[in-house]
Image (cartoon, rainbow, N blue to C red; front, side, top):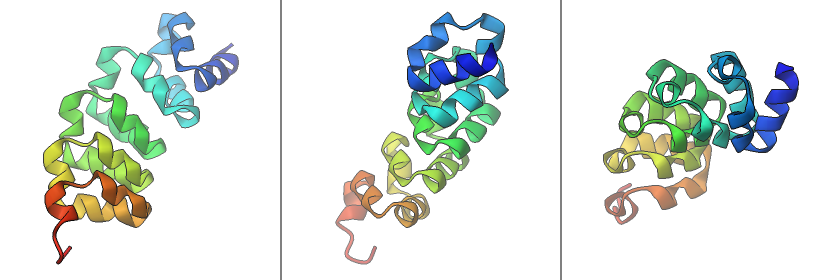
Length: 129
C-alpha cells in the first residue's frame, strides 16, 4: 500500500530499501516521503538524486533535502535558492562558493536568521553585510 509505505519512509528513511522498486522510483511517492522526512532522499536511487527537475521539487518541499541531492546540484544556484527559501539552514549544504553569494545568504537569513552561521567567513566578517 503506497500510503503505508510513505508513512514508513517518512518515519525511517531506510525503509525505502524495502519498498517495491517501481514505487521507490516514483517521483510522487518520493516527494510525499520527503515532505515527511528529508532524509528519504538519501535512500532514493542515484538517478533521482541527480535529476535537477526532481531536486527543485524536493528542495521546495523540504529545503534540507539539499543535503541529499547530487553534489553538482548543491552547486546549482537555482536549486540552492529554492532550498534556502524553504529552509534557511539548507545553506549549510550549498557548495562553498554559494555560501559566499550575498543574494543566496540573504535569502537564507530572511527565512531563518540563524542561517548566517552557514555563510562564508568573508560574509560573516563583512561589516557592510
